[in-house]
Length: 244
Image (cartoon, rainbow, N blue to C red; front, side, top):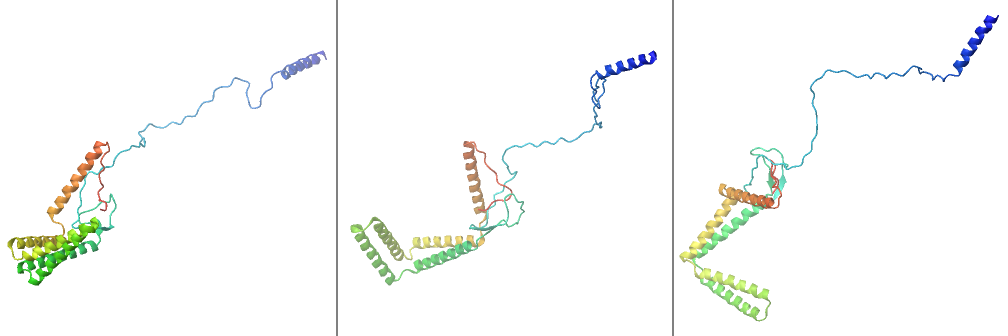
């Protein structure tokens, strides 16, 4: 009996000591915590491509530049290509208004007809009635000029002087009819009118295009020199020219 009492007292003291100990946290161990192992994926070493985008500022320059000159001048009606578009020999870049060249040809024909008539008049000589009428016109213009100089405005005086000069030139032309120098001048004017008409009908010749190209190159060189003096880079054109 005493033996059982001794065993019970030992068990009671054991339980009492356990109850006075620290509370156990669920899911934890009373032993010292160990660092957890990290999972590292393993892969075979290989060569790859590193992509990096860089931004720079600068001027876009064409490798080659060609000056395009039309056969005839006029107002651009329609542009068929954009700046930077690739073009080939024979491609139509722009269309000009048809009215302007036609008007120029008509004007050149009229000038040619007037030069021919003037030459014919000089070669045949003026009629006496025409000379008398011209002399009377000159006298009238001179009288009008004298009146304007006395009481007219400066612009009216200038107009009267121009009218006297025109009538005097007409009279002198009639009086000099048939003389070699007058015929030569009229012939030279006729030749110039014929050449101008032929140029408009045919288009610009190689000499005219070369002269125009030289003028364009000189203008570009002057622009480049001016921009260089102010520290601004000259710009180059694209492959296809713009309108103008």
